[in-house]
Image 1 (cartoon, helix red, strand yellow):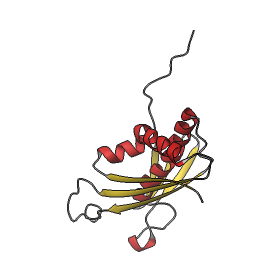
Image 2 (tube, helix red, strand yellow):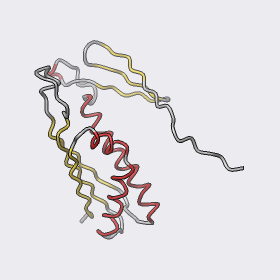
Image 3 (tube, one colour):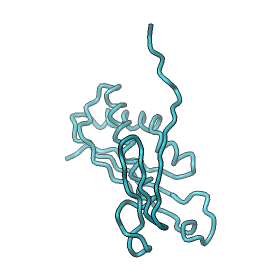
Image 4 (cartoon, helix red, strand yellow):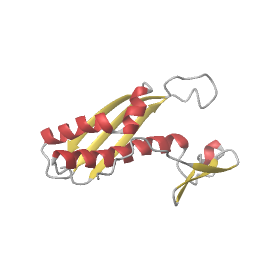
Length: 152
């Protein structure tokens, strides 16, 4: 009898917050600190919430990229991922409500494997279909400009 994969699961995060900026966030047996820099009255012990959101996109691009490459039989090797975002700060400064605070993201992915540029482009198309973080940003109205390149 085949085991049926669950199609929907519950993800759980708990945060213990110390003051206005430091949050110790836990999931499974892991913990991380989310904080603000000193110039915003934080203690600079971790990424800001917005840094954390952008780093999740990089991590998801890596994971889903490797899954898609494997499915396609493409050697992408190791990836170097750069995420740069035009962020509208009017919301976080409480100046005005902003519908799309992450306005535009430039996502550059450099692969050092033996894949051709054509094969790398095929991986990029698949990643856009399956990366939940990219889908989250796009559906929120964020423009993501992706540039998948070969190293060297």
